[in-house]
Length: 567
Image (cartoon, rainbow, N blue to C red; front, side, top):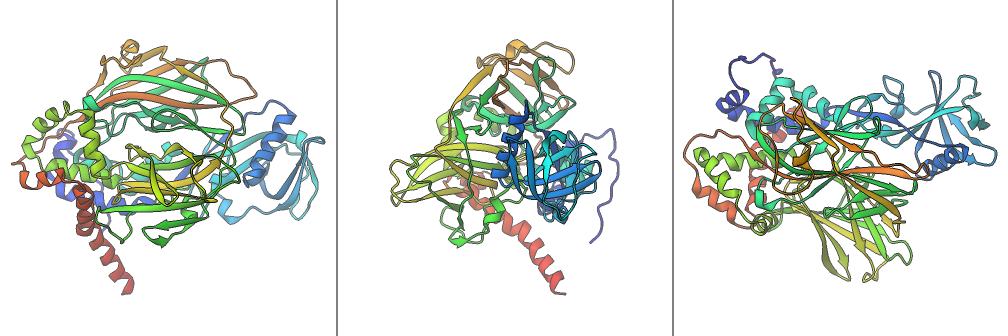
């Protein structure tokens, strides 16, 4: 195979023009990129665990121990693994078998609080680690089982997936900067505003706002979890930017600050209702379209995911994943945690469909703005675009939620409440269903009867300043159709929210609520193909179109690779 050749484009020719002239080539590159996405390295970041006193330290370590975290001890540049740790809060000690750190927990750079590290998700697993940083005079020796004085503990770090770095690495590392820009801008990318959270040092990519909201009358509030955001001089800060060929209309931005018990995790469901978790458990069995599947794929947040693309098709051209959980005795309520996102493949499909409008596309898009919300939702549901979630209730599947678009760039943590009162079985069975390759699922777990005590602050912006210094605060305060419009690539707005006083005994979680819509800037040419476009009105045609495109473009690559392997 020939290597990709990197060259600088003519600086006087717009990238979208280059892409338009080479749309077939770019489309093939895009397909190839999808095949390569899992080959790139991912990044993690060690976040400091805030602790107030010795009791707090002991409680945190016990919590990590109960979660079966992989415990790494640091003494200067020396690393050790502590097996089977036992924490003695009264004597403020920790004890366990000190061994060498496993090869799948060793990286080129020693994990350091506040720093990012690179790992290969196929051979390394940092996302289950907790790091204990001791002073240089602590006595640690491999093969011993002695008590360690926690008074010599200087800091504690927990590993989070550094999504912002991973996104840049996958795209830029696999294809190179120009190829990615050409693919995103010129070929098929259909996204929404990007949002970044300020972590005290820099703005870190957090996700996408109001994904899939391309119809003005069909706007709905969108809720996105923010990780890594830190208090900066009494304010929490985010940045919203336009980085694609589209016009973004943002109507409202609110920051949710939720203070809750340290043993509890909180997420928001698609309607903005808090969902609480304690002692999450993985499913004991998974079934993918009628066949047993590998549970380990969704046990950790590790960028290994189900793609809903098995060979077992059905009349709706959808794919199903069934999860079975062992029910806790007498539990009346459950909380389902999912980490999922739309696929880049789905973006490509929308681009392929829109391209069939040719020069008529601007007129079509203008007409779509006035489509009613009910009509828009009806089409999406008929095409199995949402991630449908159901629970088996006495032999009958009962719909819990249709999760709306989450965007293709970063996985989202989503919570759903599940009522168990009418379920007689000791197994809770959940079904996830969507169109062929429309979604990707990285993680699934369930909690039962979790503590739901929390203090919720909904905070309007104190200040919103664009990249050219304009104050647009008033346009983001409420959903009133007074939009902040970003109609050019590179435009951004930094939004600040006054930080409420925090109780040190409580954990703090953050979410951004947004509302708005966006329209694409496309310059398609030619006569519209109405003969095929009318097919997309039929229920189930879009997932069928997805499978046809997969068989035409991806399968030949797979077959060719298999032939080369046989040789």
